[in-house]
Length: 349
Ligand SMILES: *Cc1c(COP(=O)(O)O)cnc(C)c1O
Ligand code: SF4
Image (cartoon, rainbow, N blue to C red):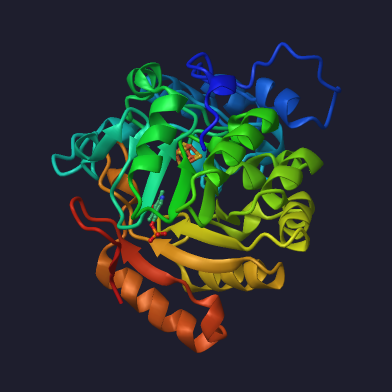
């Protein structure tokens, strides 16, 4: 039976990370998120970058504003305008260029809404927009124009659970966003509990970039609810470059895997960031060393503002071919593309 009363419709506010709860200073993930840099000029100043770059970033910042937390900032090389981590977070004027094939809703997600906050695209799986907030704003994000405010103001958890319960062919729920792990663990534990009471559900998957950008997020409370449900839980992290993995990120992966949670990685193939056999070899080798399985290498979704990151599919195939010669088979991800209307990813190899 579903117990919905305790999670009434008030559980719908945007999680901003600006919690008023008392939090321990320093390492608490909520503090790190609240203190994240939100101003492109400040970002450039902290990295010792030229003023022209700061001015360009300020001019190119859209409604999808800058967001970079300190633990991620610390991995960006100061003074290097071409740093591959910086390129993922700093607005450049190329974002404003007109590219007709790059659109606001590249995967036609407006057409797959089951009930507000619940998307049904893939067979047997439903995706919950659990939060509209992220811990970093990735310039290439395919949901950078997603109508979060509208979606979340229309969402009721009661409606979401009721819909999932009504679709008996659904075996797996994916918590997505935004980043679902910007939500506090007490609420996530409650969501996991409610889902576990739906008899036909077998698996719960969490798609998140938080273990990469604020590895302190992988705390005991998170591990407790991930392990404490009857559902098989999987975490899919989004790591695009080996320089994103420092000792704290490695430790965060270790905590998840040691807790018995399989961790998979999705990377997005991007020009000037990771479209290089050396970089990808290092990335996937490092991930498997940390027992994180390279799952997908994604062709960039054609979202407005990200056209300058696109790598031709031909080049992607060539890179995969090169990786096969350099890495064990299990370390080579599938090279895929998402297609509007398709019930699964299209493999590009
Ligand atoms: C592809 C994808 C999924 C689910 O597809 P699988 O092929 O089952 O992994 C869910 N969320 C995001 C963001 C995806 O890109
Ligand atoms: S963390 Fe994920 S959802 Fe958030 S901006 Fe980055 S890619 Fe998009």
